[in-house]
Length: 254
Length: 319
Image (cartoon, rainbow over all chains, first blue to last red):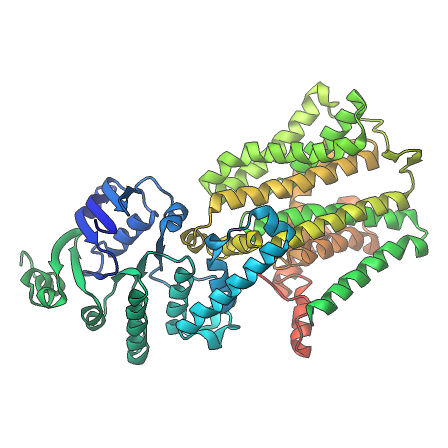
């Protein structure tokens, strides 16, 4: 059984089909690339998986459970994490606080204990602080701990958004354009980090326009155009697929 | 500035406040301080909602619910004030839960509008329904007492409200320092990202609202027995606007100290300038324009600028 199963998923905005009749599986610990020309519906698929849009038709199943009716925070609890296309961060907070806040779900002590700051609650909090540092260290952001998120460079903001997503300890991580706008060194560094995340057992789906990055990183690729899946396969197969090339070059009916 | 020094500073300020009645013999001055304290509590209620990026325009209504609950319970059923006080808070909290559990689902804008409407409704109901005393209000609300000691003097009421204020500050401080407060900050910063991190945005916002209205209800009960009479017009829409201004003038980023400073300024400034009540809105209007233009971070942002100069973080701005 695949970790994530998408069955004839459709999303209409008025009469416009953002996603139509999409079938897609994501297996445990794979890196799946979701590509397509602008407006192909890639981000819509992310929003449907993470619960930001209600589904028009079809089904999303995660770990075998139908999650159509679940709210974003409930899906997060089940292990779906994501980043956003624009760097959505807690902009006024420091790098450390961004990730620290991201650990919201991991607490075992109750809210009352938290309110009263009991010994157990404080102990737990310092444990979470250590985990926060671990993530920042792993992602190479530890030196920026104190920096306010809004003041970071674009590349660092993108990395930080992955750090925040990691704080929720997701089984499935949806990355929306993780390397877009990064320079070459930052890109290759980020690709390496994403690979290591997979080594550590996370399943990753990413939307990305940087074809070199996608081809080098992904195990499998799904291509969307006008909300429909037009191809699926290994990077080498996708590269040679006529329909894909046609979609990108804008050739009608290719 | 270390947290240890900060604690000392807070204790110092508190001691100063406790000592005030020893040096100040003016009942009127104490009366103004009592109002400042009540308004601070209302303002902090606005702040906790603002932390979640909710704007309320109805705190006067919840203040009224608390005030009338306690007044009616004590005068009509003879219940002890000390029981009526927490019950008033709960009544106000329940009322908030009832109104906002639906409104919050529709988002912050609807929340704002419902809060506005709710305070109008509360005032109209209190005024028109004879049971609540009508527009002439309720009279003869007894003063609180412990055994044979009756709260009569301004000094005794000052200590009473100071205790409420301190409790309020401690509660908010404990909340803000915990995971709950971090979740609120997260929601205020980006509700979308908060949700992805597993925060139930709706429920946390509702909790913040209910907590704020609980305290508004408690301080309402205090108000009823301090004034010994209630008139519906006290709890007008204008007061809800003032509550917003307490927070705004003190500094929206200072969730505890901001409303206290703002309330202090708005209570004492008209006295210092010796303006009569009918001109007060003009003074406040000018003040708010100046604050927004020259000190958009509020009065407390001066301390921030100053402490940045000396390299400390006296009242560091958060969230």
